[in-house]
Amino acid sequence: MESLLTRITIDPDICHGKPVIRGLRYPVQTLLELLSAGMTFAEILADYPDLEEADLRAALAFAARLAEVKHLYALPV
Image 1: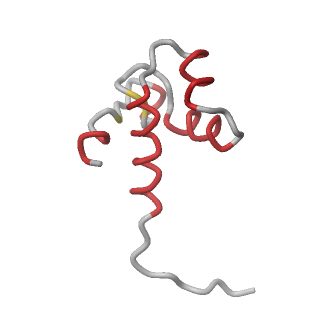
Image 2: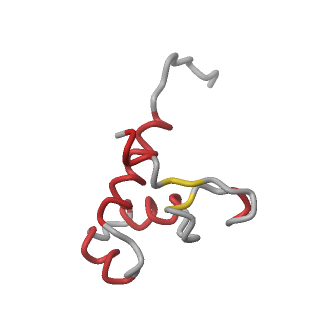
């Protein structure tokens, strides 16, 4: 997973500091939204020829890392 995460870059001068793929101005958030909407890797790669399959796996790895939870707290209802 660590080697995939090196594909994610954060630079205040690119996309307002949002995490992007290899500095290409493709926000990780956008790719995750496309995947969650049901687009396949093949469809995304056809629409964005600058991207590679490893870039999409890196976006998923980044999301997985963000989802790591150390403690859960019940929210008041």
